[in-house]
Image 1 (spheres, rainbow, N blue to C red):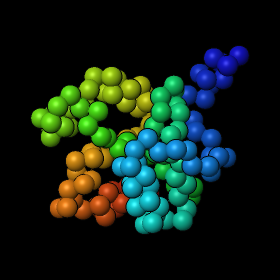
Image 2 (cartoon, rainbow, N blue to C red; image 1 turned 30 degrees about the vertical axis):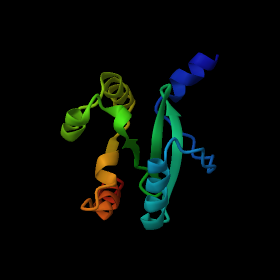
Image 3 (cartoon, one colour; image 1 turned 180 degrees about the vertical axis):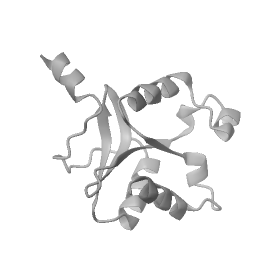
Image 4 (cartoon, rainbow, N blue to C red; image 1 turned 90 degrees about the vertical axis):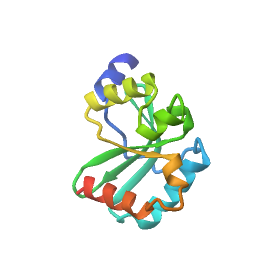
Length: 135
């Protein structure tokens, strides 16, 4: 029965829970505080959301339009080395995980930690990108 519920709900997220779950990293907590401070009040932000058996760092849902986006805060463990990180080449199981979630209808927006901590990185562009994707 649980397997059938899992298959039936694959890709769906319950928006009944407004409870924040523990963050996996300071990066996630910092991103959450930033995006919450500049987000539209019609957005619902959830963290550590499970879909298709995988955990998504954040799901932001526009409650007006019904659009949603999966946000991944990618630290060094998402890459084999600094060169791969510079070119946005993710480790194989991370790419496979994203392919599975995309096949369930998820759209992704990824933020690299190395960009996030760079003093020249425009964090406001992240908020603008997310807002545009949720219109």
